[in-house]
Length: 319
Image 1 (cartoon, rainbow, N blue to C red):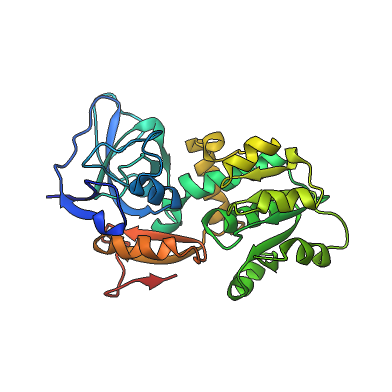
Image 2 (tube, rainbow, N blue to C red):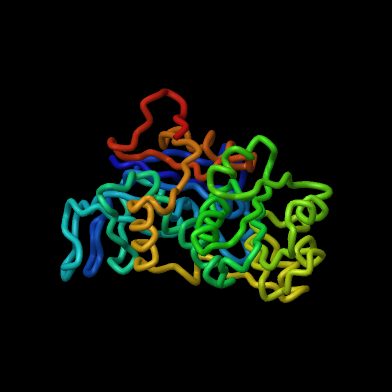
């Protein structure tokens, strides 16, 4: 029987199980995708731990994962846009970490054959999020922008998109991430106490925009630097956003197959890289989330589900 990730109570990674499930069948206007790779995301940890139980309650046994890439396995009545064998990317909340996903056709985009499965799997989530926030700030060559958690999944893509718009980018991260950040075109800045002063010393002019992916005082840092609230975007500090009126543009503002395909085309053209920190087999999902919780990744962690993506080693493979 097909495998899928499920959890039947709130808790840590230990509640995650690989279980047998029925193979889904497509209904009218739907397709079933055989998943090759699925991304894992920080928000999924909070949902699984019950932090959002009032807002987004789990319905046990609950599935997990949102963004994925794979091959169309079967199509339902009335489907003409896709055929079995098509390579696709999709976003299906709490269902992507499975061997098969049933989805409506408007939640799928075509994956270029030249794009790897792990890279394609992260585009509908972090790719769309980074695209939305950079577009919202309308960055240009006149801007100097700070990107917090610049080595992370969203941050590493936002750095590149900001650079493509001509902006000067300062990326905050650990000292060990500096070579990685420099490879993306950013000026690395060590995060933590004293960040504001280190940023001031690193630039000759003023900071004009700020992308916060970490919270923990980054909005206050941006304001201390004189960045207007309308040019600060946070994905990690709703309290500060409400207090200071800064922006909170994210994935919802770019959650379309058209955006996913645009980002994929940029990757194939060599203009954008979707960094993959490591790849784990589905059976190692607990280990993958434990690593993610450490918040020291270089890009994304991906679960390999299909044969074409499966790691060649017993544990995990860095890419």
